[in-house]
Length: 329
Image 1 (cartoon, rainbow, N blue to C red):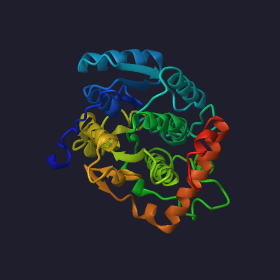
Image 2 (cartoon, rainbow, N blue to C red):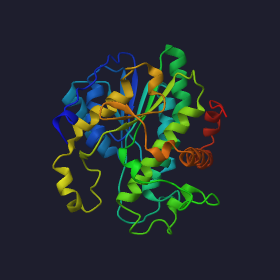
Image 3 (cartoon, one colour):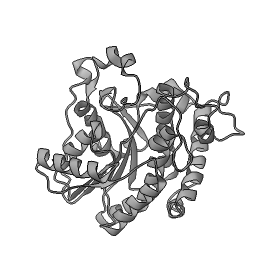
């Protein structure tokens, strides 16, 4: 990666009076993004980590490195729908406002495993957990937008590797749910796990975010965007064989460099805010998603993912039904 693709500037904004959420803020690009945002004078910056212990450590480190006293960290485990529900309960009880939500957490696993909710770990962590959280945050985001008369932002961290896979009907027939197939053992063999599964979950991110924006009214104050941080030196590949990445990682971005893409996607209005609705940011530019995503088959799969995700989320938390009222057909 040339320096031109690594040394992008950090977008700075005045976040006075605004509440910001950064999911996965104790390590990697989430930690760096949280620090950048903390320096922009938010009313409150809520970080999340998987345990109380990690929350305490992250909160102390972000405060120490930025000088911000507005930082708090709350536990959130995306492999648990119960944890997500408890987190939103707390948010509703302790302020019920949110201007910017940056959904960042992701994992890779080389082998098959199922969460307490019955879904393959990567599928739930990288997609279903964030999707449920998104649905539950929408009413809070909308209330904040109506109160402040400002746009609010929901940014989902994706990746350009979504273009390496597809959910074509040859592998994902219409008589079986895509998410059910991804969570089942038949499509979760050693050959399918690891890198391929990560790519598949990033495709889920792209399809879900685009569907979410498309189902919101065109005039909605909620702007949904996608950020590709690029290949970064982070803990993302901690669960798989690092040897296969040694050569590529030599030219990878640092986590801080990658986090700049998250900040840009969450804050920028360059080109007009409508340009950011459902948009995919990579290398500091709004770029089209993969050709397959834009194909007729991709658009059909997008609606399948939307329907399946909505069904799973509605069963996980009845409050999702309230979010449905925000959507158009």
